[in-house]
Image (tube, rainbow, N blue to C red):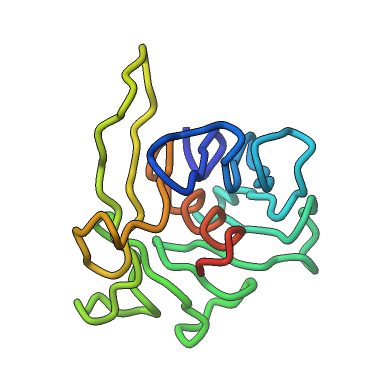
Length: 162
């Protein structure tokens, strides 16, 4: 599975209560809430020729609706290829502002978390923390699923955190 094609959930906490889900990604479509009929915020589409993922506004794959492009784990505004359009960089389970990898430019850190309620074949849980914090009080949300940069950027943006 690559570029957000699996199912990934964004929860406000590690209770993982289905009705409290902030947003989810399923089959390349980001919807708010937990239901298949939730508002569609983004559509993800991989372009293997250019080794990039485009994130479109709404349920569209029109070139006019490109919100972001993910290239080399860098999130670009629209379909720009210029370095001044880099909004965020994803590296080593952290999101940095712009094209930086400087510790003061860390926006979010992802830490794998244990499940409160175990089950069979559970997807990994990732705590989303402010900056480089390790404090539970700085955790904004929990992502259930693989830590895929395209999925992470799309879900956090849908929630209004990017």
